[in-house]
Amino acid sequence: MLPHRILANVTRIYDLVMTHKLDADDLFIHRVQQHCAEQGLNFFLVEPVWVEPFCDLFAKGKIWARALLNMHSEHHLPEDIYHRLIRFAHERKTQVIDPPDVAAVAFDKARLHSRLAVAGFNLPFTLIVPREQLENWVLSEKDRAALGTPFVIKPAMGYGKCGVIMDATSERDLARSVALWPDRHYLVQNRIVPRVSNGEPAYFRVFYVFGSVWCCWWNCFTDRYRLPSWAEEEQLALTPRDTVHRIAFGVAVAVWGIHFLTPLRDIVHRIAALTGMKFFSSEIALTESGEFVLIDYVNDQCHMLSQSANPQMGVPDELVSAIARRLVEVVSQMIRR
Image (spheres, rainbow, N blue to C red):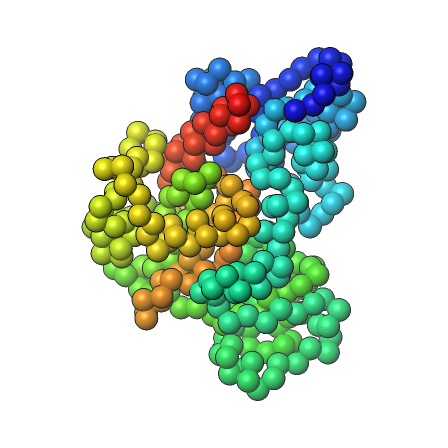
């Protein structure tokens, strides 16, 4: 909380502000605004047209926010105005979801990989290549055999598939990734092939929101989302017999009141404990051998494009609504402590 002498000069205090750059996530924005109204919280959306004046007024001490939900900032671009706003808000004691130092470390795949490996997560075989070594970097025969062909190359700070090479066959393919996404480190990984279940890859995007978890099918080839059916949850052991989590009326509901972590939920709870992240998603593949492999570790600033807005790549509407509700519930608890 800001000192009273500083708050005395503030002319406007917001309970929750949200940074946002996309114009396609209207359902998520509307649900956050709706739940803020239901909780008696005032809300401001810092979209591109407002970010410059908002940042200026924040810097001058004219406005302040109790909580800030960061849905857009560029971790790899410190000069980005949204990045600067998040950093400034954190320094001014706004409760940022997630704090910039925590999020930046978790988002950096090169920095996080070794921590996950030490903690015993099931990960693809991975080599990390610093940018300054790219020109002379050569695969050993042992590493080439472990990677297989084709293999995957991805920038450490990339997102949205930018710079990801799925069909790499040699060291020369690193240049393709660099051209698409300049970065400090690149991950070279063996390509994990998910099991096929009912004609679809057994590949999941799992959302973690302050201890609540939602598991969703995500087709890694087409980008299409789908909630698992009841039968699929039992078939894939996504939900144990004595605990059932379903999305009903936009809310994740626990039945019978006893919670035992399923494989997917266990993985993201462990990631949250390791990183300190409160709102993120992870990509996890189920292989033919029955192993759950963590593919994309921490996706910060989850894309909440709704399926009604984009059926091809949108998140199911009920899941978008449930996540918005959970976030506002947590903010309400934060600022009323």
